[in-house]
Amino acid sequence: MSKRDYYEILGVTKTATESEMKVAFRKLAMTYHPDRNPGDKEAEIKFKEINEAYQCLSDGQKRAAYDRFGHAAFSQGAGAGGPGFGNDFGDFMSDIFDNFFGDGRGGGARGRGGAPGRERGADLRYNLEITLEEAFAGKAETIRIPTSITCETCAGSGAKPGSKPRTCSTCGGYGRVRAAQGFFAIERTCPNCHGRGEIVDDPCTGCGGAGRVERERTLSINVPAGVDDGLRIRLAGEGESGLRGGPAGDLYVFLSIKPHDFFQRDGADLFCRVPISMVTAALSGEITVPVIDGSQTQVRIPAGTQTAKQFRIKGKGMPVLRAREVGDLYIQVFVETPQNLTKRQRELLQEFDKTASDDNHPESAGFFSKVRDFFGSARA
Image 1 (cartoon, rainbow, N blue to C red):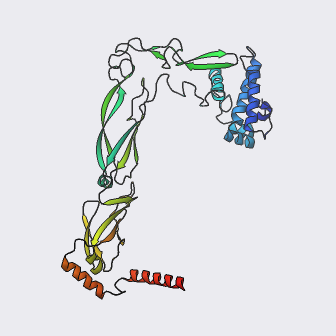
Image 2: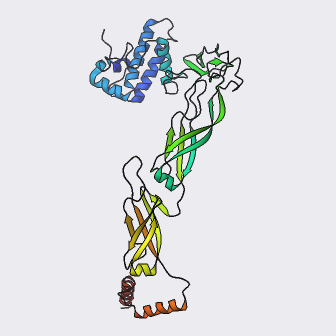
Image 3: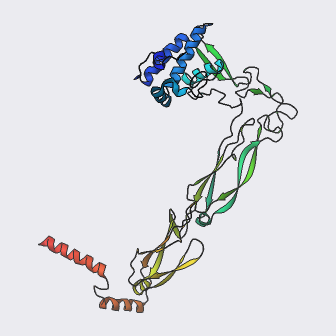
């Protein structure tokens, strides 16, 4: 028997908007809902048919496939109930109202494949401060973190050894109870087991029935070379233990790098500001500068070097994380004006000033020449 057209089932056109289809579905669902038609097999079939159509057309990808290929788009592996259905009518009914009238996650209290009461442990954060040298070379670090771990006495069950939790009689181990109120079915956390699905009559003395105990753990982490400030390292499963056998959370280590006495960092490049004497700047010379790996290097200063002149030392910067590249080191010099001069030093500088020409100070000579020209033109 061939299937009816999904648009025809919902009573909408092929150009119907999502809101128009939702209104049509709600109206039909209320009409043919099994609670309003007890024992009516035809209404039950129509209700399934309506939901099948809506589940397809409310999904953008499924609707596009249906518009192009019709029912053939779902003929392979779609299951007996069409797209989005299982074969169990109870699960089918629950899914309809969890998806359409519930929180939109489609899983209800159980989730898909999850066991009642078992909760994933919380994620943890640890802040680790390292030096720039440690970021350059990488390091193995041992950290201590307070956390919750699975109780060894009861293996996380919360029950005293020799006993075990019993299934909650109120919710049947589901963790949630459902009450019908007219057309709607309201589901809430079981008041007896508080969502666990189990009751511990004889709690473990080691954890008081919680299934977890507070402990300080010691962990070793590897900080790779080239890490940058703010990098996050994730250690899967090293967070808090889950409740009642649930999976553990993750641990996130956030790195911060201490300010350095000499170097400023920009990505993989390092910058260092170095003072030089007026004589070295004027006559040339060599200066010794530090390198992040602990060594030193020589930089040749040419005669006539001015403040802010920058020299590049290739390959002496930071390594690039997870790459076979290294940044550069940039040395920026500034000329230091001599202080606390002796009488003789003053005399020598005064003698130099008397014999100096514009060729000795080309920048200042050019600047003041432009100033004179500017005021001369202004007076004219």
